[in-house]
Image (cartoon, rainbow, N blue to C red; front, side):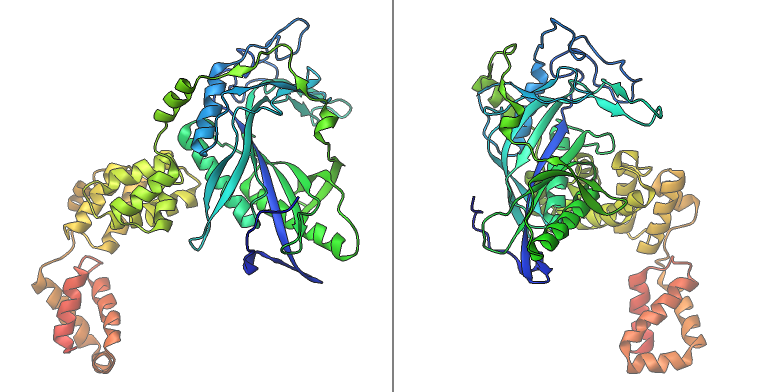
Length: 492
């Protein structure tokens, strides 16, 4: 199979001992469907319940039990397909994928093979530096999850928890369009954002609700695809990047030594920084797929697809474009602000009727920076959009300076309160009385005659004087007034 034409960027090539190599990456994302019940039973999907407490007779594969399709899971898959601009197949079928695991009670998985519910689509992936690459979606199909084997409860026995057994998954299969670990990480980040916007998956990788099988191969630039290896169940975006880099280096080393790559399934060990063989890679015929005899073909009406499309929220790409056009923020800032639906809503509340660029600066640098430092999400922010907007009003009205604003932000974060009332009660109002500022300027100039002569010879030194005046005034002097008075006094 030949690759689609795409000129490799030299920065994305990997240098080997015998020349450059190009990475080819495809991802299979397993996203747990947001639904209160499982795909084929009414059992709860709530996380954290005691083992085997959310298991129906269907989930446990008791004899004579028949699956009944949860229509909301179907609607969620359609919403996801619409979110990645994919073709929705009005007729699809469920198949049995046969393999044995102790935590797979039926001895097979109900999945979709030849006729998935969602066909081809694409995702626009933003990269650092402003580049955007398009990653094709091959298909999205519905399938049931397996249970969980537990090996650390007893030295001689393993246990099985079937709470996850039968939970609905969407397997989102990309085309092999990614050429670096950075592209792959950005793709997963973007896809996770889309899923969370639509509400079809919460994207919680720590709980296993979003995990990836990573297909990696290497080739000389311009040559056909090489033999790929699949790295199973990688559950963090950082580990996805590390697994790709590690596996690429392993394959390049083998090929440059004259060896060949075996198509196999591997596991990534982040502690040892290595991938290791798990099993030879199965082909479709190994699973003995056949249509599930207990489930009729799934038929969806176009009217229902149209209804779901009309009810979709504004998606990240559209929101990002609107932020650039309506608020005048940079494409990068718009991308950061729209990563989470809640973050975008927070920004819009802060920016309403205010200087949008100033609002973006404060939301991204001060608020997001502090939230990241504290390991908190936007929904956990101690500072509300109303409080931050009030702080920006005080800046715009010249009631407080930028430095005082940062002190006020710290008070709002730690103690809360109304920004305007805090400024008055704590004496934070900036000094705009030019007479008072002039008095401080005179004192600083009188104390530093040598610096005065230097500043007159080198006007950029006025910054030193501004700093001294601001320090002497406790940061309360109006910076513009300080600048103007200093220029007049120093004759600059």
